[in-house]
Image (cartoon, rainbow, N blue to C red; front, side):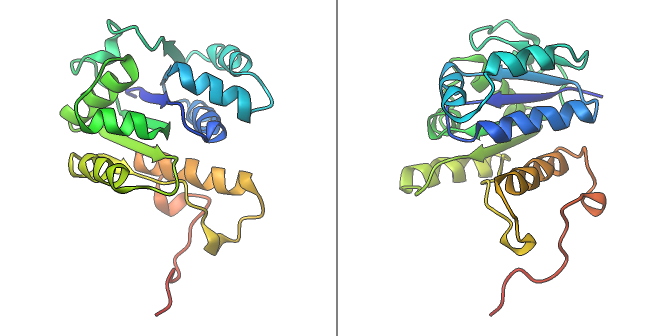
Length: 197
């Protein structure tokens, strides 16, 4: 199986990133991690366990590897290296703006740019609210280039009881978009109407 790249940028939502990596490794999917420097600062603010603690635990899995944000000679910086795609979780508006304008001055952005140019899965979990016009224009430009824009919206129709329920739903949607989980067998499914007119 080709690896999935997980990029963590400096936006709120570290718990979604952590659970995404956990879920990929539970599925025995080869997983390549890249973190921005700002993401580690946000992690420190939001999470009980340190980033280093989780990185150490993930590194014990033979399906896990990681590269530094400035390792531009990493294999994932080239389109000749096959991957299943990439998810940026969470995706800061700075990262979205850079990608939408072709600015790829670090490995996280370069790996995402490779996915766009090679027509591979690129899933962005944007974390910002409210969104102003430039945010929306950047996300729309990325969607037009083939990226999947997946805001971490709560699935109210499933009546989530806590944040973990919402995070688990988002992670499952990421796995479905990557083709690692079939929508029909996904744990959180809903076939009824979501709107009433």
